[in-house]
Image (cartoon, rainbow, N blue to C red; front, side):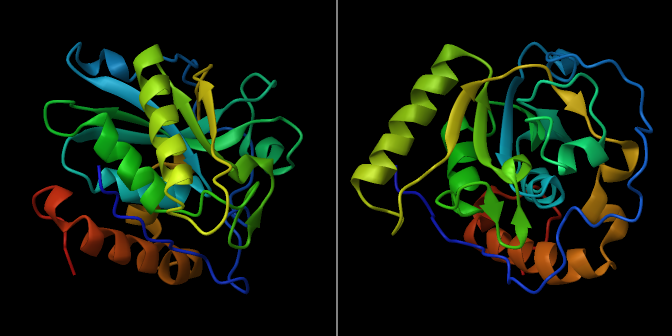
Length: 224
């Protein structure tokens, strides 16, 4: 599989994802349930990606045809029901992630991996641009053994072919409890596209992604 690898690096002087003005307690009290979203249909599959600020990750994967939903949240740490403020402190062990429910008839797991590795820098440890900390680590949380097998095989192949100049540090782990992020984080780019972080970080990344994956976008998504 020939991956459309392109690095969409964030310029260092831009504000970090963690500088949200709404850094308060959790606004949504939904119980954490790993399979909650997958229950939308028995024909859908679920995968959870961490690739830096979840505002960016969510916007990218929401644009792909076959993606039913993309929800921002936290995974991989030791604290139950963490808040955004706690996760941003780096003390919980959680990563900012997006849990994706997708229709494998319309989009394959391999294509989702192509989008994952192609839309961030998987060679920077605990960092994406100006967003620094373990909460921004590159990670794939697999929901079944087949996902883990495929993700590992492709990661090894990318390393062996030296697709990236530096070594891929993406973590591949089993999915654990998914904690949905506060309501104001959901569909962040769509609802807050006028804000500086959206304009100067998310928008350029999303535009480049849409050009590279123009044949994979949902109907109505701009390819420009």
